[in-house]
Image 1 (cartoon, rainbow, N blue to C red):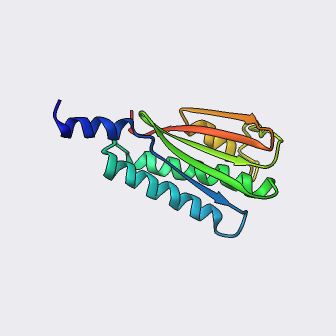
Image 2 (image 1 turned 135 degrees about the vertical axis):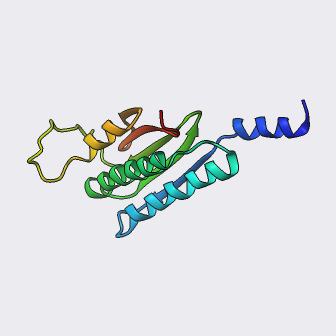
Image 3 (image 1 turned 60 degrees about the horizontal axis):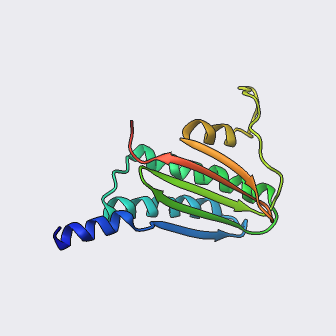
Length: 146
């Protein structure tokens, strides 16, 4: 195997991840969306991963919804991790509130509180688990359209 092929294999096997901490300040949700957009642009450009425009929009939406919930309901800081995992991006949001969120039943007349429903509808998978302090929510979004 030549050196270029070895370097390409090494890039594909590298852990590609970015993390950020937010304090629940005005602008945090916009900063979270921008973090996702920049991360996916880097994944596309530097690592050659196929990232559809739709996937970019969905990852930004998921970050926005999960970070909004963290800023709205959890006192203190929250953390966002974005990680490339094979054919998907895993979005993880930690916050200090130990109450696990639950999607409400569909109600077109309800104003607001649709974020978790939206996240669950657009993601490949979604899980929430209680941590020693707070909770961790993880959603996976496929990079390429089916």
